[in-house]
Amino acid sequence: MSKKYQTPLLDELKKGKWPSFVTEIERAAEKSEMTDDLLGQVEQSYKERMGHWKHGGMVGVKGYGGGIVGRFSDLPEKYPGVKEFHTIRINQPSGFFYTSDILRKIVDIGDKHASSLYNFHGSTGDIQMLGVKTSELETIFQQLVSFGFDLGGSGSALRTPSCCVGMARCEFANYDAMNICYNITQAFQDEMHRPIFNYKFKFKFSGCGNDCTASIARADLSVIGTWKDNIRIDQDMVKEYAKKMNLHKYVTSKCPTKCMSYGETGLKIDDSNCSKCMHCINVMPKALRPGVKGGATILLGSKAPMVSGPRLSMVLVPFYDVAEDAKNGYQWFRDLIGKIWEFWDEYGVSRERVGELIQRVGIGNFLEAIGLEPLPEMVSSPRGNPFVLYEDYVEVDGEQG
Amino acid sequence: MTDETKAQLEEAIVNLIKEFTNRKRFKPGDIVKEMEMKFSASGITKDDIKIAIRDLTDSGRLIYGYAGGSFLSLPE
Image 1 (cartoon, rainbow over the protein chains, first blue to last red):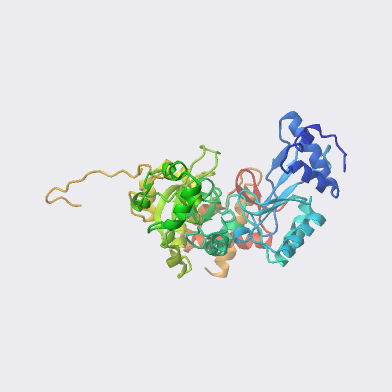
Image 2 (image 1 turned 180 degrees about the horizontal axis):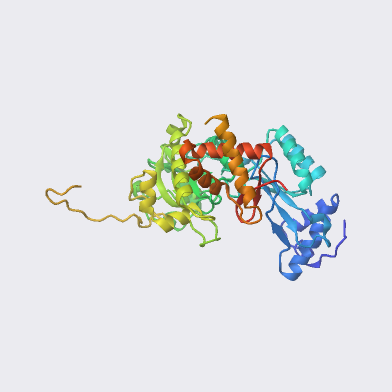
């Protein structure tokens, strides 16, 4: 094993029972001098409790403004291998499906032209090829394109839309998350590759309330599966579960809206009060299934804590009939996005996410601008109060409405 | 938009960035707003300006950079 640098602090991180990123970097360092220098710099960062990366700059491939995250060492003389250590974001397929053949082709590129390190996947969803020198960017890009891949988003652009495995592998999916994700990715290629926004914009599509893409916290526009009708119950299977566990303790008492009970007549659910949180279905997947009238709730405005603190998405469209819109190429959804972007473009300021803009100008003004009627279901958090305020209004005779 | 107007628009974008080199970083959105004002009489739309920016970056006359946000610049 390569030991160009002594790394006592990093070595500590190999001792746990879980796989260690240090072990993987050391493996990569056996065939890459660049990665050896990475170990040296990271050790120094741990020792000094200070990062030694600079990011940004003028790195990219011709014609694209996104997809490459410039990364430079601020100790280039000491660690020349990581003087330039850029990240290439590669647009992942919907649902993260790959053949072993395509994975080999991608990692062969990394072995030849980069540090041999990857993130599968970055928090945006892309494959991240780490440790690329500026001079290698165009070569890698052309090779990826020859395999049918493209770069993802970065900078003030649409970030790579991502989705859960959806109907391909999950019985809980209430709509085809993979299809809409693919469609939207194709429809907004320009917005992804050529930054034109005030700041980043993210879509994430989750097939159910389990929200495997964490879209409610990480996407400016979250599309989360839900259903309109009743939870499907197999009472025989409920009884089977009841033999193995305390249903009151693990299911009914955990219901956030207390809309269910279990007794001699079986499991009863007051579906009109169900918030589709998925807890009971997760605990008894063989007994309970989401309803058959599936669709999604569209939420808007979440972000990580940068300018004004973290935010969760708020409900914008309580029920979106995804399957119906799919027949028309998701045109209704695309038009809605267009209106949101137009408003953001017109009134947003630099580095202001769309959720922050809505907070600043008020939800009423925003809804009016994008042409949506305020609804009681537009809540800032599930089962919370709507923040669209209604005033009792009595029309006086002769008054103009 | 005629070819002549498109050429004028592209030239105006490049000149704007050239004029402010090392003084101001223009976000693509800033350029769209500047050009909308400058070419308001010519009936040029936002989409026309976005296409002009795309053509300029595709041809390599302008490149993107990043410093807390994306901006357009002349190639180094």
